[in-house]
Image 1 (cartoon, one colour):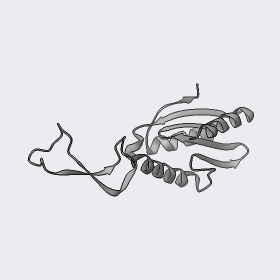
Image 2 (tube, helix red, strand yellow):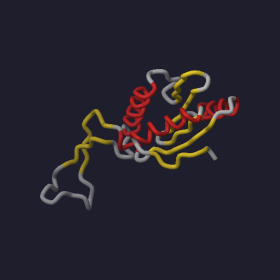
Image 3 (cartoon, rainbow, N blue to C red):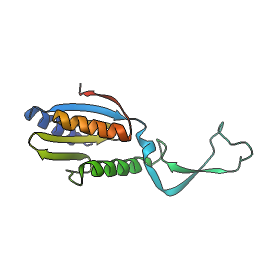
Image 4 (tube, rainbow, N blue to C red):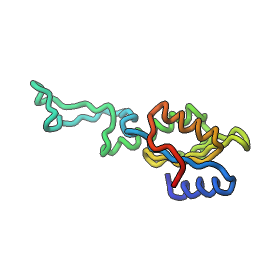
Length: 142
């Protein structure tokens, strides 16, 4: 999420007197599935007995892998499209507009989310992400 997106979310929330929440997604990088084969040597201390010369085929992207962020972003985008349809402002700022009373917009920065909207829609957003991935620290922005 760009700083401008965060500022927009917060400014619109204040102007329209909407609720604001934040939460972290648990182990976000491990949800993205790598599309191309990536292989690595076994780590010291974790070498399988009798398989010293074997290599590991990665299916999920570990934290510092260059492709891990992109695969996690694709996974999150697919989930948000599945829940809210294809109506989104940008790849970083998603929205669901059901009318003046039911609105939610969320900005994601890797595994951190700041969202604004009506109480019902904010609850639906956090429940949806929590059910799929698990979240920690849901609450008001401080």
